[in-house]
Length: 138
Image 1: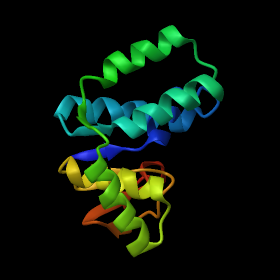
Image 2: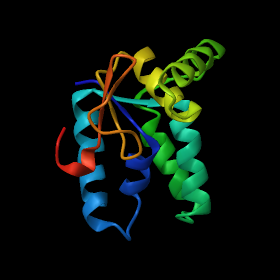
Image 3: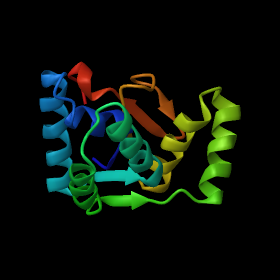
């Protein structure tokens, strides 16, 4: 099932202080990459790099390795049209603009679900199901 990975999934894959979530995130990323169902957005990659540098304090060389790996995923580029659609979803559903941008990237990427710990598990936004992969459901 085509799935957009939210930033927190990528972060947990590198979070040594959360070993259970790290194992889940690495397994999920690997499986979706293997099946060709993994989708990322430029927003997610930008957020990942920011958190990897500032909070995880990963070395830039390791971050570049991760980006080289993630570059092989289907990628939704944030465009003015995507931003406008996110603004509409933000206004319609009263979710944060950045969360709406993640959802709209999933829609643009032909995804059936967004995998995120940050959005409301089980909700459907823009025709896309929100799944928290760390709850053990999927």
